[in-house]
Length: 375
Image (cartoon, rainbow, N blue to C red):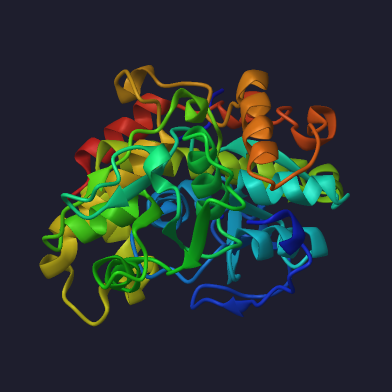
């Protein structure tokens, strides 16, 4: 029966700065009696790469899975902790502070090269989200025009840094000598750096630009080259022994997360309202109705990076799958950007063994629930 329905190689040792969210807790992997069914409810710990102050992956996967009942259907109680970026999120998993996290592939590959015992178990962001942007009318029109320029990145340990270097390399430049990477964060801080001349261009993800564009700003974008097609970004990762000990719980968590993602693709406004409920800090003290239109558009921009680029939701399948070709391209990209120094060993990096069971859910039921959900 079917079930109902971001990073430098040298930064892996960054200490984890964790703070429990309002819905967080302690005690990874415990269980308690489910009062409704008498069954045991498993508890797992989810590491989140940053504070949740906007519409992104935590809304589309965790918040929706929680509010729409997908986690309870799987008899899961998920606790969350916040960390300071993907590198720290991977370290939280490696240290046992968390059971699973969606982290940037660069952090996972760098950790594996250093012998950190983590393994990727399911893809999330599958459509390359990074772009180089300039102010309208800038003389920078292609990657080669970046020579001698300052590029604003989120941080030197984020996925934007290797991307900016790879873009410079695409333009025939030496990414270590011909461009200068300046940490500028995201949002208004990044915009101020660009408009104030501190940097000549920004290297951010699509959703971050969408947020700024909805405030009335506009940008020119450099064209990404074909090398970026198929490179993976956010990917679910666990510790190897956690995968052995909690295979069933991790499978159930991934299944609930992908149900949440499918729901979000079909009804992003309802998903966004679920996000407000789980993470009220997103509202910044405002009323939901005052923010819902723009926040829904921002969430849609993120969801588009995580679902198939073609086809209708009813045709989507193989949630979490990452091909050998995609991993090879990702490894090549990370080598060229200096994140890793050698080809990753896919036999230790990637385990697709859960995905058959992860995909054992009624997608039509999820779609129907999303279509009938109040907006």
